[in-house]
Amino acid sequence: MDQTTEVRNIAQVGYGGHAEVNAMTLDQRDQQVSGDPDNAHRRMLNRLSGPFAGLFGLASVVVLVALACAVIPIVFSLEQPALTPTSASSLAAKEESLMIIAPLPETTENKTELHPHLKRAVVEIATAARKTIRLNPELATAYNNRGNTYVVLKRYHEALVDYSQAIRLNPNLAVAYYNRGSTHRALEQYDEALADYSAAIGLNPNYATAYNNRGLTYRNLGRYDEALADYDQAIRLNPDATLAYNNRGLTYRDLALYDETLIDYSAAIRLNPDFATAYNNRGLTYRALKRYDEALIDYSAAIRLNPDYAIAYNNRALTYVALAQYDEALADYTTAIRLNPDLATAYNNRGLTYRALKRYDKALADYNAAISLNPDYATAYNNRGSTYRTLMQYDEALADYSAAIGLNPVFAAAYYNRATVYLIRNDRIEALDNIETGLLVDTDSTRKEAMKAIWEDLKSRSFNQWQ
Image 1 (cartoon, rainbow, N blue to C red):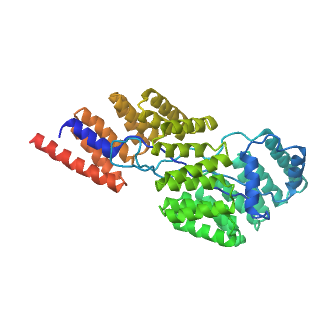
Image 2: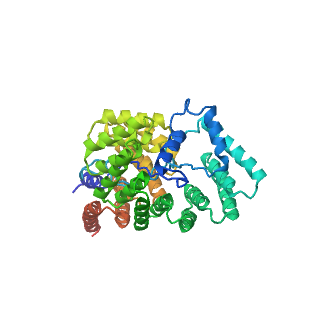
Image 3: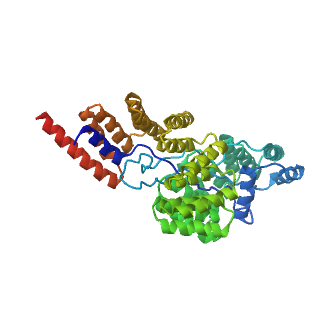
């Protein structure tokens, strides 16, 4: 077996680039005090993330200010890291198809600022709450409500101070524990979030949304059985809890229980036919099952319901790539980037498509943009390295693979890819070391077996040459 064959065999198994898909988890803030939690969610979510022109007039501000002395329900929508691997169609040299679990660097669905009308309304509520606190500094609900306004403005640490004061004044105010827990979760302080959600549930055992959000937190920590138990309880308490069905579906998808996943997303859609997130997430599941036509239908439904849904465009593009419909894929990636210029994932994925089309300059430009937006983006370094390798710019390829490994020391594909460059340079010792390390960290059993055979063959022939 010559050196070129060795390199090709490793590339066939190790691949070089990988695309990313985006799933969404929905968090709820203080839903229990409203008559219909899910309707309240939809109303406030539309206010927080939709096009606001003309929606908030003076009357709306007056109503919001009047609520300042009540416990105000606020909905918080958070997007979670993507945990779905892309599907490799075969052990062919398709470097864009690497199976990898890679995070989406977004934390919220929309990174735009609050619309001025809504921002003014929130400021009015905060002002009213401050006045109430001055008049009655012992009123716990006023601190809770001001904390809610700080959350909407993303002033999380000030929100924590207010929720804590509300709890000091009224240790039995379950909603304050709940809201403080949601704020801790937004700050990725998961242990504190669990403690607060549990306290809220202890005070109100029927607090369905607290179970939902505690389930989200368990999922963040990879404690899937506990997450499922909490979603089950949320649904028992509120059979119409669309968000709990969506979130339980995500957890089933984490566990590759796709039948259960589809049942839950479909239940969420049945309960709320306008639930764009559930369509997006069901589309991800169909794509994982290679049911591409159904995936496209769901992504298109999500986009129809929310034309600004950048993530759905990104995910639909991935499905077009799987169908080799590259023009449609490029159009969707470009739309996703236009809607959210900070979506590093879309740049990475568009770069993969350009690379598949041998438009290497454009591929490099997109990887550069992804890395500029997220300097810790190991996936993009790996993919850029593969493009440099194709262009025979081996120093740059090695540097990028090494950067990917430095950012993610268990990135098996990057070790395999770096090994190919060492083989091209006839450095078999380094190549063997990299393959061996890749085998130690690789969790893909199929790829691992193939790489192990290559490693043993390469090691045997290297040993014979040394004799």
